[in-house]
Image (tube, rainbow, N blue to C red):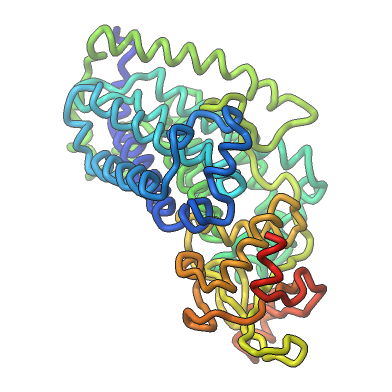
Length: 483
């Protein structure tokens, strides 16, 4: 079984197992903090009603048996406990079935959450996290060498993420082909970060260099991941560097962070020790055995299963009608990935306001401030990734006119009129400090970054002006009938 055991990838396994566990920890913390106000029994899109409507079409979920906020909390805390144990490396110290069980239970718990999450969990990186967690279950423990087959499956996952993103760009918006995409993207991306203003204001020729470099990183480098060392490690390093650039320039939840972790499936111990000599002694003397027969057979069966399921994403990669993010089964395994096949040219934001005055026509209105999305023009963007602010992302899609967002948004306005504490905790600032407003409204504003001169004069990051009214002033009685 010498071919089965990858003796030069102990560091890669450590990073993959602990890194994926860290991303699950972030995801389950977000579940505990956000799921109930968004999707709970009294949420914006309650899970019980959704599961009653769609039945088995939702996919496998523990909540089909029954949903309660208490059960959701138990699922979240169990997920946190498992993620912490794997992050600390405790199951990895035992036989290979122990981390196998821990990762699979964690995967199953998050699958239950994601399949009930509707539009608030309708992101490609949900499937990416699920698939990475499933594969991490088969990396083994410290008693066996990392299976080379599983490392190759991780590289295949990374290939689909990177090459899929590259192809969707080339097939999609012409600004990717003429290298002008970053003339717009840093300003119009869903959730800018603290450095996005500076990235946007870099010279335009440098923006073209960025786009060209991105095409190389996503269309050429992924093929190098499957070549012998040290080429594979060099390719992985390029992936990590390009993803770090994206981390610095915006907030994309755990997408970039998880992609960097996947790259370590191609990083050899020898190459890592050559780069950081101090790690050499720690990486020496790792396990060399393939493990018990049942373990070898299980990994081979899983590998064959992934190869069979790969037909659909492979076909998608070469299709002229490539889907940007797609799952081909209800378990979110072996899917298609990609991002920003089209670039928004201008930024619109929905601004939500309330007032305690009796007459909305003459009222003084006060703005609700969200945590991550642009709001008051003097508020500089924060860094939240890899944490995922689901309400803020929903507000970005709402401003784009996505019809799927309007149903929950009406309920959201009702919750503001009710001064619902759980909903208000999703925000950065409630202008009424827990009191009920008499009226709420929503207006659409056009946003743009300030120029360097405007920033010096005003200290403001944004300039905005009103474009339209999305929701006229409504009272609680008026909106409850609509919701």
